[in-house]
Image 1 (cartoon, one colour):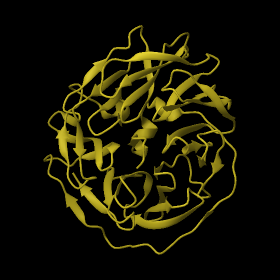
Image 2 (cartoon, helix red, strand yellow):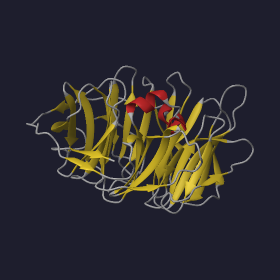
Image 3 (cartoon, one colour):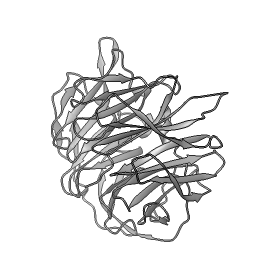
Length: 380
């Protein structure tokens, strides 16, 4: 089971939004791998209607909490224009129930991150950088509380385990971030404790990227290619630099165990993916797919990984079962002129994909029960 619940945002929202967490800076070396294909199903998918509103729901972001529990944030038309909605599913998208949002007049585009540590305890980072607010829930998003870090500290990123949550906080000074600190909390609690100074001020940004058990990974960069990955083995109390690299613009780490760490990186016009089997000390280039810009992928355990890439009349879903050494096409999501897609799998068979077309219609959500071979359109 993947041990890094995370949020994924539609490509349109990701490019237009203010999510600081997508600016994770990393880099690494590369080695070759190959992509393989297999026949795909082109049958028209079944459509499943889920009655939660009289107006069609447009998904913008989803966050997998654990297993088949997933939260989807989006919008619906309402008498005042466009209203935000948060939905919860306990069966990987077969059905949804509406839950609450933290404040009236909530704007989806102002959400920097939505993340759940487990099915009940979650976090929503809302607002513009410097003026953001971190909200926490401990009852499956039926209610939310604002967290006060004091001293005008701003939250930059969040990582969770099922039991603990971590946040990188910083106080902006002279137009730049500085004095980075790592705060820790019991999952679902509003009480946070600063446990360490995360990174020296020579780095323009330091973000907590992943956490598993007692291990926490930080990424830091100065915006010119000098990047560092640091590891804590004592729940963030102290860190050791374990890897340095250059050449990539941004990366996001995902840890599926205490030894296996994946990187989703952007090198400008191309996306690069990497995998480590020694806790992040060394990385290996894992894919020859080389999609343009960012192309989020979703590891399901230590060796299986899925991704979804635009391809002609739709989007092809790829799967690797050997740690990314080779990929095969599993199926096609039938949406024309796809701008991008985000995948989130509960296991090797059941998963969701959030697709953004280049033009109308709006974003759509699909689910699969056969490992990505066929996809069912979810009408919420």
